Amino acid sequence: MTAAAPPPVPPAVPPPPAAPPRPSREPRDTEHTRPWLRPTIRIRLTLLYGGMFLMAGIVLLAIIYLLAADALHAGSGVPFHFASDAKVKITSEVCPVIENLEVDAAFFRQWYADCLDLQRTVALDHLLRRSLLALIGLAVAAFALGYVMAGRVLAPLGRITRTARRVAGSDLHRRIELDGPDDELKELADTFDEMLDRLDRAFTAQQRFVANASHELRTPLAINRTLLEVQLADPQASPEVTQLGRTLLATNERSEQLVEGLLLLARSENAVVDRKQVDLAEVADRAVEQVRAEAEAAGVRLHGERHPAQVLGNGVLLERVALNLVQNAVRYNVPEDGWVRVGTEARPGQAVLVVENTGPVVPAYEIDNMFEPFRRLRGRRTGSDKGVGLGLSIVRSVVRAHGGTVTAEPRKDGGLTMRVFLPV
Image (cartoon, rainbow, N blue to C red):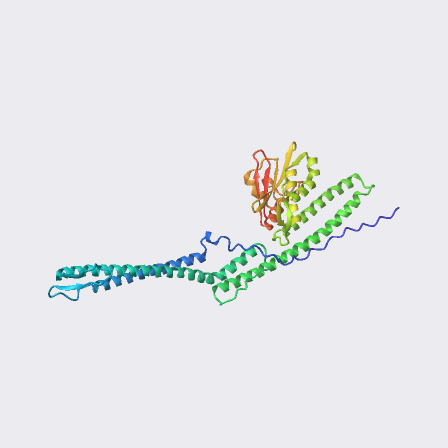
């Protein structure tokens, strides 16, 4: 009787990853992107009290004009009369000249009244022109001063908005830390900072839990896989035991895929900080080569034109996006004469990855459900041998972490057209 061989040592499982470093790359500030194309609060406040000042100036100008007209009219009476005919000499530059003429009193009174009317009109026109120039100058100064004052008043709100925008990109380490008087804006900023502190602690705890849980889950799965492989390698094992071992090994492999998918899904929820230049065409080529053997076994033809398309991102995560899309396109295809087209192209401001395939007809109302974890076509949960139901969820999560979008459109003859848009 031979002694049993000692159990093999399971492969080493890598320790849980360390906490991600604090991001050092400043996100793009879009606060000043075409500010005149939308009615901001600053512009509305400027127009409001600038317009009110302008209306007040118009009313004031009208009052001054009426008062001046009344004053000139009250002083327009002739304060003297002629007792007899006399010679007069007119030196006014406005009234008609009467020089060295003998005129009677009636003629002179009429001429004098006309002269006063003309002088009053000239004086009012002169007053109006100068008042309008003064009003225009004051209006320009009011709008400029109002814009500056509105900017100073709303500066704390702008700081809060910029911080919230950066936090929306999963940069939870930033704080507003608003200085100044203890008013409503500072109270709002302090409340926002407290909320960010709680969120930061919650996300850090979640990342630590995911790392520890994945480590603890992968260790027993790796041990089980090793034991099953050793048992299957035993030539004296009965066929029943061998079949049971293969079934358990397939189940164990599926559990390992599920753990890896959950870990990647949890990690990809955060924005990608360490970005490098990545050619989307090269990423798609690697994904196609990895799936080529599976596609040939299933009778699916792979083709497509992949043009260079540079993006800023994480090459490993982007390769996982392309791999998941191509694998889904191959696995969910028609049994005969199926094909998958994988293409890339560069567009102004973005790069596009397109994965199109033949396959079953997909209703449009099922598209959103396909991106949910553990969901498949027609709402079925995980239960087939084609995967663990996390492929498209991981795709959407990784694409969002890169600031992009992913869309799916059903083809008329069956299958889907998946498009991934990534900013360059």
